[in-house]
Image (cartoon, rainbow, N blue to C red; front, side, top):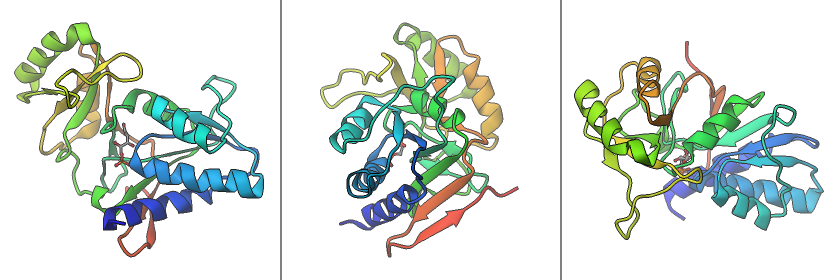
Length: 231
Ligand SMILES: O=C[C@H](O)[C@H](O)[C@H](O)COP(=O)(O)O
């Protein structure tokens, strides 16, 4: 197993240990979350842990179902007690960039609705400043040309339409396209998030501000560090 995967698996395992009987658990998306689902699924199968889970993507529906984890939709009455999700970058305040897997919209809904949101990641995801990872933006397909032009004018960034291996646009579970924005350095993520959100045709950004209350950072030696938001 690669060093990165050791960290992901370790963080996913610790996160599965946070789940208690009777909880509603929000389950994010991505390669780190797959390890969390495995560890949680094992607890469901061997300990008889009784939980209900809210998935953030069709991929997560498939993984969780394989482990026999009961799934429920997000409603005002059924909100997660705890949501566990990965991240592409986390700064010291635990502001995040997410959406490398295209699931940012459902992920933000499920993270924001949760009583507690805990991020799991390997140590490469911790950064001083967000922005080296291109910021994903979920955009209505019809609006992509005009949104892209506005981004170039206003933010001096050249958006890249996310494509599949066959050259066709990547389409999210909600029928949206993804524009990846290579900012390089994002100095004020909260302000950038607000400015991007008001562009007509933009549905959601991959900037998650003030949602994560804890980061479980998995290291190549299997150690998991607990990180809380810096002031
Ligand atoms: O849309 C995908 C999610 O935001 C993922 O949580 C994020 O991209 C991190 O994924 P991974 O755990 O595969 O690095």
